[in-house]
Amino acid sequence: MESVVVNWSGGKDSCFALYRTLEAGWKVESLLTTLQQETSELPSRVSHHEVPETLLDKQALMLGLQLHKVFLPDQPSNEKYESIMRDAMNVWSHKGLNRAVFGDIFLEDLKKFREQKLESIGWKAQFPLWKYDTAEMAREFIDLGFRAVIVSVDGQKLGSEFCGRIFDSDFLNDIPKSVDPCGEYGEFHTFVFDGPMFQQPVEWAKGPVYSRTYSYQGADLIYHYQTLKPV
Image (cartoon, rainbow, N blue to C red; front, side, top):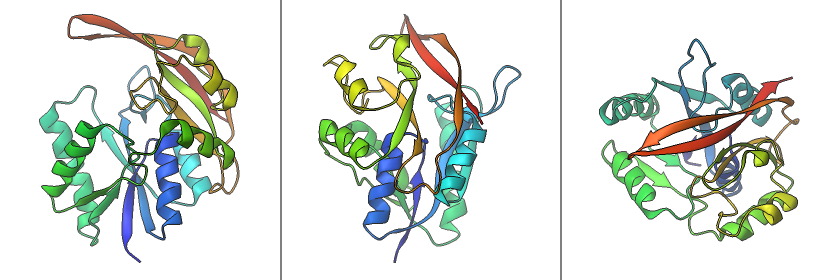
């Protein structure tokens, strides 16, 4: 049985990729996640999802898996980011691993980027969800008993009222047709708190919803976030 590391955000795509990887008989040595370093205003948290490290710890505990955390400074340069990630992968290279699992579905450029970067250090990338129909995948994820909450949305595509909603059939029916059912274009992100692989559900409570504006190529982009607190 060959071993792998699963790249982990705590969201539904990485969780479903983990499910498929275990189903295929691979041994998962660890989950690997990137976290924004703690600041005076915010705790350490999952990049783009804003889920606190403490909830990620509980999630990994309920999955019975090791969690390898990689801490990133605020807005690192490409060179800095690649250096940090190379060091993280070398931890596992020294243990004889050379395969990483990703939850990407159909973004070709991102897939090629991951493959090229891993190939440069002697690794191979695996994509167990590749070319999966996202509408079918979303329904299967729900039907299997996974439960997830919406933790962030792209304000250009969804309103703040979608934050904090459960990823279920009602959510899928309510999102605009222009939004991918799995949020593959970054329309929304999730935190999975229960499902077939979980020993027990991860307990959490809602905090306030807040928004941030980012400048990108001369435009102001708004994102909305649902605060989650461990219980």
